Image 1 (cartoon, rainbow, N blue to C red):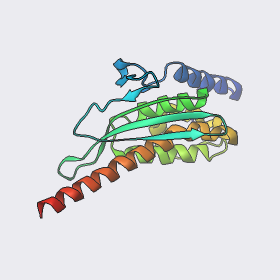
Image 2: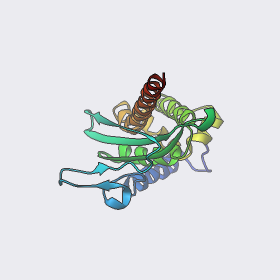
Image 3: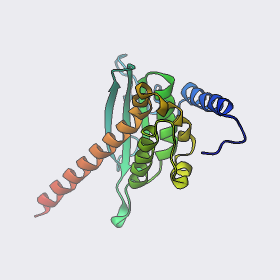
Image 4: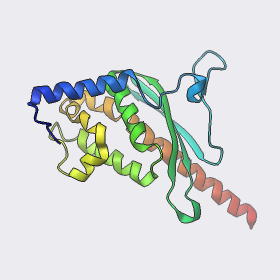
Length: 195
């Protein structure tokens, strides 16, 4: 990772600021009607499906170590004429430490509008980063693809915080898998009806 001509302490401070900024102004977080959520009963936010042609699913993730929790909602647009499936929309609601909230925010920025395959590659790269114990990634292409998510390299030094950073990514993977599975089941059902 580039050091921008800074010593380790200055670099670590810059990364902490990026994480705190992302946690303060989280992207993709729902909580009001403008974000696609509605609170019909006062018990929380219900996420509305915005793209009816998409396959929608959500996954609730909980980190008992820190108390972080998030529900990640995805809408996957099936690839047309054999093309790749796209993550049309990804939003979340939840609470937790600044690491989990910032990671969710940065993940949304990275995967929204991307192909499912690319999003899964990013998730695998991010997991490798978290398993690096602070060493980072040698693959410059993976570093470039992760962009702002590289600030979590410092987090990977602390095993108790790794789950916080991975929470949203695991939820995204689970939500996409559910959406695609439901889409396959639905298309198999349509084929059976056509017989």
